[in-house]
Length: 155
Image (cartoon, rainbow, N blue to C red; front, side):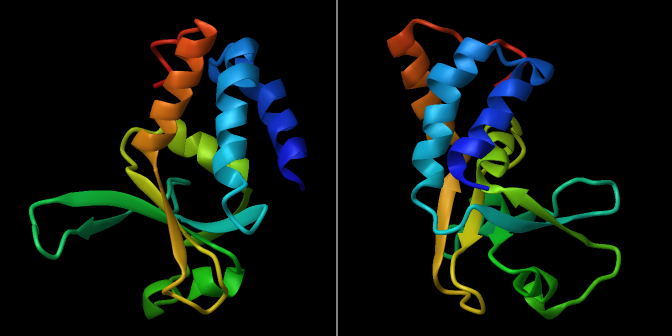
């Protein structure tokens, strides 16, 4: 599914998620497309626990261990997701999700700081991190420019 098709679905479903259509069309969707176009794939595999929540990894700064961030990983292949951290766990579900939908969820979930996208199958070194605060800041800038506001229950 291409980015524009993914965004059309998000725009149609936006009111169900408490996002007014003009906000989605004029601020959120263009921002999601901007970030998604920096990635190589139109869908990614993410890990979910049994309660359907994302499997969150907490990373610590090596130089400042007290600084932590909560991330989820997006994998280009199911196999990479299965072998993440060398453990195959039958309680973990692997979900395929369109990239724009994944970014939209990042935008709206406060307990996640970033998504780290592993861009090349089998390569743990080539990855792109997209931070939630950067995504939100650009959407806020778009809204200010359009003189729209984010509903308080969204961000």
